[in-house]
Image 1: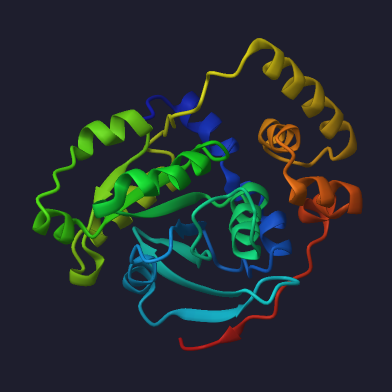
Image 2: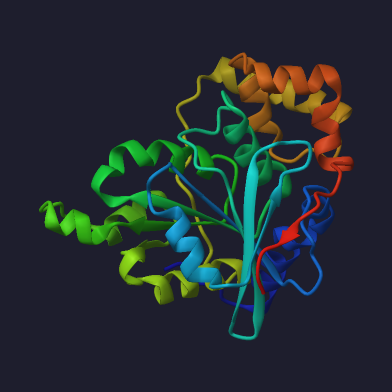
Length: 275
């Protein structure tokens, strides 16, 4: 693990922590009262993500809709080491390239809400397919944990995964788990707390094979985006999506919605399910 050493480095890490972007999270519909950290829970469909969510939050869950969307969301919370964590269960999605409303919701939350930690739940029996989403998420956040779920099924199918090597390659904590059996949940909670608090500094894998011309185009377009949307995070990622012809990003810029995602998304009305 990469540990933070020295008070100066620790203070710098704290100042850049996404917890200071609470206004964005509030505008995305979250009640931020009495919360120390916000955790986004992402993953492909059928990876056991809901089981992980239920294990983390127990009965402290709420349901409602995302602002302006018919997509249902669940959120809950837990306490660990004296800190309060809000967990937001994002729609199951195979990609962040926004070809569906579910993908758009997940992408916007990670990109514009900037949760303190994004936990990606992956199916250990189909790891190669699941890594597509993991790598996309690592393009837009430095603070992530991979929950390698269904490890019991992987063992049953004689699938062996070098968890330490995978963690080194991805640059984030990788936690083996079998959520249905509640295996690995304590280790997952600990990893989430370490990344949120900054005691584990992620160094995520990033694609670095862009050509010189593409990097120049991204830089020029990022500068223009910064002038038009000064509060917009992850400018390079947004610029690359534009260059790739992402219709949802292009439409959001033309309509002005892209700016509203960081300056005025209405608050959702959550409905208490249980306490």
